[in-house]
Length: 621
Picture 1 (cartoon, rainbow, N blue to C red):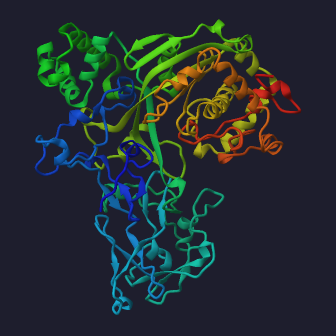
Picture 2 (cartoon, one colour; picture 1 turned 30 degrees about the horizontal axis):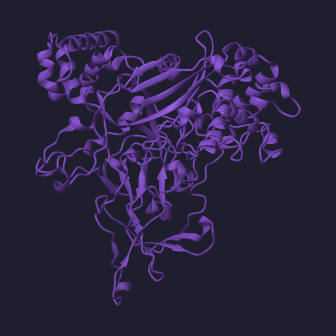
Picture 3 (cartoon, rainbow, N blue to C red; picture 1 turned 180 degrees about the horizontal axis):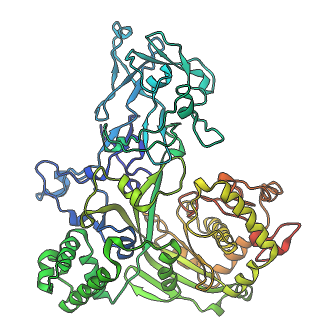
């Protein structure tokens, strides 16, 4: 079986360990990175063609490099040179259990992960039929918080036994109704049939009904199955496991790290560094440097080939010195991880200046060119004519969107560990443009010290603590974070209305931290992976005379929601995902989750305009 998928979707949402549905209706799960770039017969591999270099993201994720997912090429399209022809990304058929939809059969059967066609039911009831009845994959799987997934334990469930010995034929019968009570499992051994009632429920203490109710008096914890690595791949787990529909939104959350490319040095040195940091070249160069070899430009050109043809010897020497300094200072893979705020600080500093690099072009606008009412709260505006963003998949989670540790997340992507120099992650690059806005730091500091603002944030902190297991916030939850995050959402919604962008074409990137190194900025950009938003439209909206009406409209939109007074009143108790919003709903503030960094959490219009009873809470009041 074959299917077509966009390369960017192999990063998210259909990467390693994620389930997707082929055009013929077959549900499949993405295989681990061990099986990507397997060499087909009668073709040559040139992996350098797929390599990406992003020095900041490589250091943070502690990997040797990144690779683009392969694109499928044929001998006809590649000409006489059969290089990288026939590369595919493997998927496995999952769930492995299927049932016969014929009303007189309903037989359950299990098939291998590697089955390459739709299975046909071979029960005797189909003997007189002209055509065999094709079986359909079941809709249920079982997942746990540690990222594992397995087939629903049909045999264990109906026999109420964690280790059943019966291998009789099973049936899945629908008795009608819209609840799980209408789904019944039977076994030919004569054991009492059992419905799927409450298999997706969770007990108040955090345990699941599937774990505690499968067999009376004995727990059924997660066995740690990892079918994306093969039928027998597993690891110790033991946490509660819960049933879920295979298409449910909590079955897979891709953990993606992103970085805006920042030039380190002059153009020539930066080009040399980009070549040296590519996986195939960088692994050799790094190994030689670790062994104490004194590399020359001629040695580098031997491994880099045509990629180094336009780079001078002096630039190569300086790039080698930079690499040696980084390896000595950071200890390679043993270096400590930095928080998201500190990782973004170099971006924050660069976006406040001008740049003419090919991958990052920034022009500053005189602050006095904008209206006086904006000057009261807006400290800086820069226009990003071109930026390059790299997004890399470093892991995934299930049940909750919270991320595991970086090393645990990377380990989930491979069946067997590899050395640092051979470790790579799937990634892709997108180009776009954007508008960077920075709030006046003194006014923000004075506003967030108000007692009404402090009490308002305290409510969000309570909601966040209640939903701590699903927390995705990349930094501390503060008043300025809620203010800038909410304003970014309102500004994106207004730009969509003014410019005609699709709602998923724009993204936010927040730069927020408190004193002593305070940040209060936001970047709205259009790195959407296609031509939309790369023609200068967003930059044009940031120029004087065009930006002021957009910002004023965004502020005015915060004063009233189509769902008010309900939306504002619900802000007293929480609403939205896991009740982690106050005055924010789909009618006023929420965005597609691809556009929001915090999964549409931690939003509150009252932080901008106040409430009817307490207008002083609003920053713009």
